Image (cartoon, rainbow, N blue to C red; front, side, top):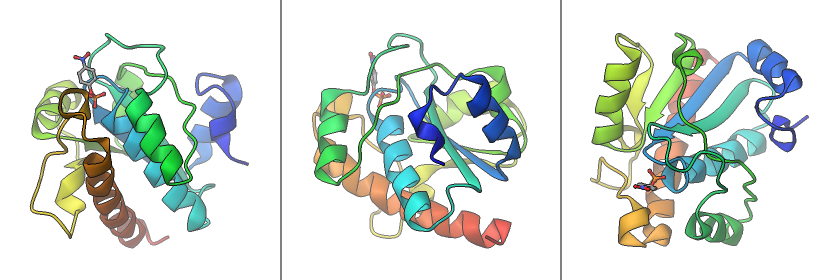
Length: 173
Ligand code: 4NP
C-alpha cells in the first residue's frame, strides 16, 4: 500500500509510520518548492526499489507561510514531466519530526542550520547534496527565487540517488 494516497495526518498514516523501519524527512524553507520535489523523487526511487513498506518519506518546511498549500506550480510541472504525481500539502516541521530514528535531510545550509537549532544533537541530520556525486553544488538553490525548477530537479535527483544508496547500506536493506 502506498500511504501517500491518504492524508498524512490520518490515524492510519500515523500507525503506518510507526511500523516503518526507516523514516526520511526532507526540509526546506517553505515546503512548496524543493522539499516536496525531493519527497516526490525519493518516494519514486523507494517505490521502484520495492522498499515502500520499509522507508517512510515526507517533507516539511521550517517556515509557516505556505502551510496547507499545494506544491509550487513549477515543482508540480517538473515532477509531472518525470512521471511523478505529487499531492502533498505544505506543513511546518514539528517536534515529533525530529525523532532519533528519522533522517532529517536539509536542502541547503540555511535549512541545515535551522534544523540544528531545532533538533539539537541529532545523529541523522544531513544536507541532501552531500550525497550527490555529479555536482560540486552543496546547496539546492531556491527556485522560488531563481525560477529554475529543471536545474533543481537534476540536483535533487543526484542527491536522492546517493541518499538512497547510503541509507540502504547503513540500514542493511
Ligand atoms: P522552498 O522555497 O523553501 O524551496 O519551498 C520557498 C518558498 C517560499 C518562500 C521561500 C522559499 N517564501 O518566502 O515564501
